[in-house]
Length: 273
Image 1 (spheres, rainbow, N blue to C red):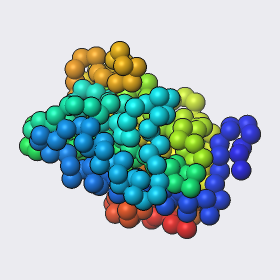
Image 2 (image 1 turned 135 degrees about the vertical axis):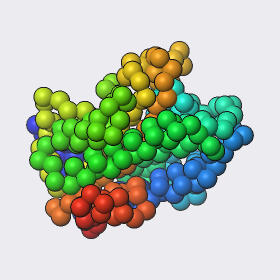
Image 3 (image 1 turned 45 degrees about the horizontal axis):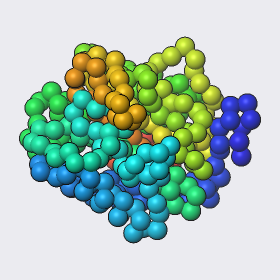
């Protein structure tokens, strides 16, 4: 079903369960990648690992070939906010590495991202990663009871501002609807805006993905047409989950436990189908 005025694809319970199967493939690929993010690891080898996990599950990487993108994951190091291309980069002790990964299984897409400090990292880098991770979950918790999509971004921004007022929330990139395509309506902002966005309805599935930087939010795109990095060289972090809103609440399709642990800390009960 598509809401024509807002062009938001609403999923049936059976379709959400199919998206959960896709989401678990993405979750397991990211789990394998996290184990591989060690000093000396080569970015293209991490990409190959993710692709292998996805294909072994009978799915395919939905990033590979998307608008010409040349890899199965995005691997963004230090000042790269998003869309970093995994090539011959060698990971070093203390690097801040964001990995964005997605799969399509039986026609249904999933998308998730994590940020990891490689080995021992400086305290400010670890704080950035944790603040961004918590902001993601605060946004997911807001989605559980939101009347409008814009409430998610307001919750994300408030989470970051309360935890670390000096950090910046990227405005030029954000979350999105997801389902039969990877990027769909509606846009999911990571900040409070006057426009509150479309009404939240059961069957809506969103990729919620805050991107937070340690200083200025200005970013630029490299000559490769993909790599987005902070203009001032500050570190960046990126976390993401694919989340379904059901008649009973939310279900995090790309978390192994459906989001139960994190959401319980926020007084929210997961509502699987």
